[in-house]
Length: 235
Image (cartoon, rainbow, N blue to C red):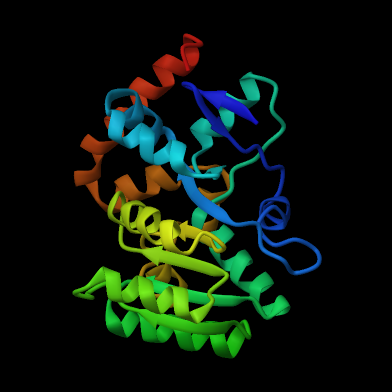
């Protein structure tokens, strides 16, 4: 592992490398908690102690942003960008191949239903439970997850809500692997389109999102701060 602003980050060369760090060749699961790391989160944790604590609580920190990849490469790491959507889908495929028990949490009811059906029919995933994001009592939900014997739990409730829920669930069911996935279910079922291939190939998805939603430009100013720190070797 290499560090960026004091945060240790896994350096994966390929998507398969990352998935293999979660599900072993014999089908067993490495328990823990995955969180995507990008430039925005690095800047946020530098300013907010609570954000840093959430990121440090993860056992699996992967390079979701190209800016983080560049920072790690400057320190000698051999790594590539691992987009969260791609990691989740690859993980679900491997779970289907190994009959791994999966529990889905989050998103709208109709989106969760579509995602569940697609995972079952196309990926042969062994779903042991699914709960949309509009539940009332999280303690009851955690009881269901524990009772299900889930080996992988993915949570789509947005950050930092999903990370807080995962922390609480892990305290009662530490044997599983957890992953916060944001809007991944919507992308998976086609409700939200990913950036075109050219943007993905050249790591310009952030630029494409700004073109589609100019209001996001204010959020992207944090990238200027990040890259200034990168160029000055202060990360």
